Length: 207
Image (cartoon, rainbow, N blue to C red; front, side, top):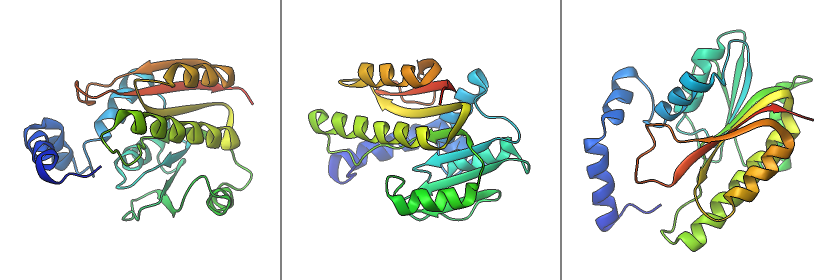
């Protein structure tokens, strides 16, 4: 999303007043987005030691950074993004489009015969500010992430994806319910109150 002009000034003001920004710096995380995952984890325990996790749209890497600290040396985090990302301990990064066969093949090469325990997506499209355009784009991205999860998840695996409240979200939830045993929506405290952003959590993947 463009941050020039008035919108850029408002964004900077929010950042300056945001306690999560300061806390992320203090704790050495790459962005405030980490606290959304941390708060989801505190309630839902979606990550565990030894798990294999794929983080879609990972850059700059705060979700991968946090996940790697939980899965430990016995687990693995594979981060994927179109944008470059600086290296992180215990995170293997693939720069590419997860919807493209060559990127899926690169992920498969890292996995070998293993299946994934959790697919995470904190992605959002480049926002235009026009909800009639942005909402379909965000839902299309979530649908692609769900389709990817269906390719790599182990039985019983989980999926967490950013959504924006609006058209298409109920249909997406029903689709997820056909593939997973448990599906719910959550809004962590770190998601700004005025934002339409929520997260769908899906567990117990049924192949």
